[in-house]
Image (cartoon, rainbow, N blue to C red):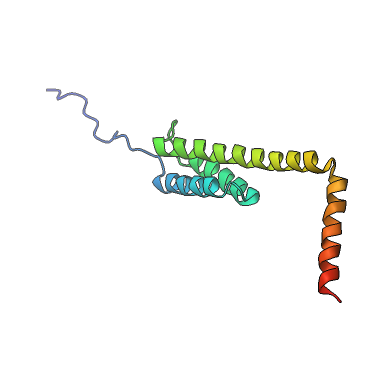
Length: 118
């Protein structure tokens, strides 16, 4: 008498990494909150993307939180780059060139140094 094919040893487990997802979320929040600090935001955004990708584990898809963290990290990186480019563009528009900006900056530094050293 055959009872059927019952394979209880083939239980499907979710291989996604919850700690990696949590790390991705944390780094994406830090990246967005420090978007004006270019280096920190860029570094945390990259780490957020890496941890979001690593959170997949052996699965083919990411969890919803990991996908959200990845999109927030990418947004933070793009905002940081746009802010930096806008700063340089404003500087060029205001002073005409980097050399003229540097000359104006050095004049201010010399005035400040002259006022403090009698």
